[in-house]
Image (cartoon, rainbow, N blue to C red):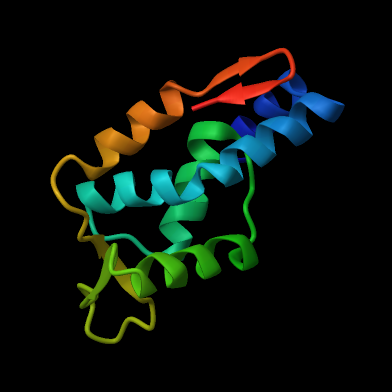
Length: 119
């Protein structure tokens, strides 16, 4: 994983890296819901997945509040861990059919123009 991070760091520098991270964190709830639809996840799994796919190391202070928010909104539900002695909290998505696709479409339809943007 360290090699992947180093490769990504070389690719992105300065302001590009900062903007890339901000965009990624802004879309983190959607990424979490997508991953939680595929399999039960915990905070560590999210941090590892983002590191592997995007080369960005997220802190627990970034990930866990989003997990709690999504669970509080009813979009994630807590599920039992596979290991009975596990202290990790695992979550699975409970989003309605088509919800994530609709979010994807809305994000894709944001048009940035001179003087502002349109949704």
